[in-house]
Amino acid sequence: MTKKEIVRTISEEIGLTQLKTKEIVQKTFDAIVRTLVEERRIELRNFGVFEVKRRAPRKARNPRTGDDVFVPEKFVVTFKPGKEMEKRVRELERQAAARARASTTNKSTPAVSKSLGAPTAYDAGSSGS
Image: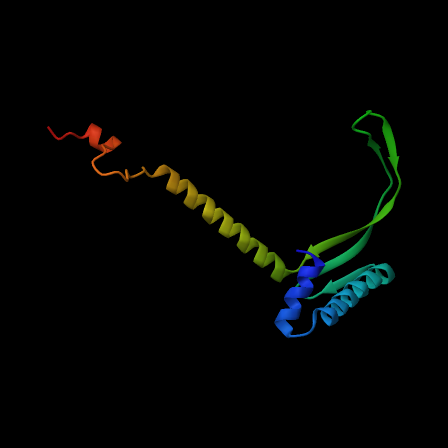
């Protein structure tokens, strides 16, 4: 989903123009970034926690040449989802697992012939005579 799609969805739900909604969404994103830069952490209840963490300098290897490369320290933004988000994502996992079980079960059941009078595997083996 893009920012434009978020703006369109919110605009339709609350009845504001897309222009005004875009301004509000952008101001929200700007406030999140500003808070991360100034305070290095922002907690949004029932959503999650964004945090700026320092990644230490390290030695790495260039996969093309195999040469050692020095990677300087850098700051990265991490995100830890809140309980509500975790719960809803876990539900997606349960639904996917249920679909996988259902498709496995459906594959193991024999197919029924749709043409009339055509013998099936069961008909060939059970002549009854």
